[in-house]
Image (cartoon, rainbow, N blue to C red; front, side, top):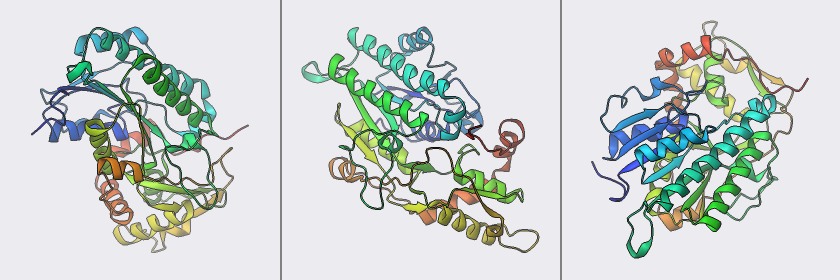
Length: 362
């Protein structure tokens, strides 16, 4: 095992029990020799079962802390004195942001503020160890391509794209991006911001499109597709995202922004149809009909962005990262995982989220 950077001995991951966060924590504990501090308040979307393979490691610690609690965040930083922070904790489901926008502002905006302030305090105390007075501390702020709004039929988002959020979720993440930038420019906190495209893979909470469709199909339920189904997203396998974050932490330049995308644009209706095709092969319906027969078109989401696409050229050119998983192979791996791991998702389906539609304006 090895550290990504000899100066990064302790890495604090926020939201480490979530989908992307748990993939990152598993990687750090399994494939490096760093000490990992997982800061997570274990909301409905946090799953300790996703961390079962690493939870007993002496290099792993869980701090059940809500990032909205400034003093609690400060105490964690003072106790563990991390060399790097990878900030993933967020309320992330667009539909829920329509139902509870205040929660998204509190967590995604004020939570980010609290983490940046705790980092600033640590730096003021001389945390670091770089040469020529440069701190080795890094704060990687993980954001989304949704902050840039909606694209037309052509083009792609880049690091120069303006923030034009169209949902409460996107607005809260855009605000957090601006905080991260200003804390670097004003206070010198060595922040690196990433904006990623839609992630998918194992351990994703069932409210998100891909797991929701897989599980609904397995339960013999309708497969609801919003609007005309032509909304387009760029899909990124979660393990590829983790590899990108590791590269950005090790080699990224403070103050810079890096867009991370999978280079796999799919319309929602085509994606759901492809999922049905894979399920027809791996888990045929008991009545012999294609799972695609259960696709139903439902009223669109309010403010639904039409298209996202990400130009990941900068992170490829500057840092040498590119995705290794094709969308077709990653999607099949994902379906297979949900077929094999009903022990993981069935408790969530029965106790936390039964599959009901969210974000419908009354």
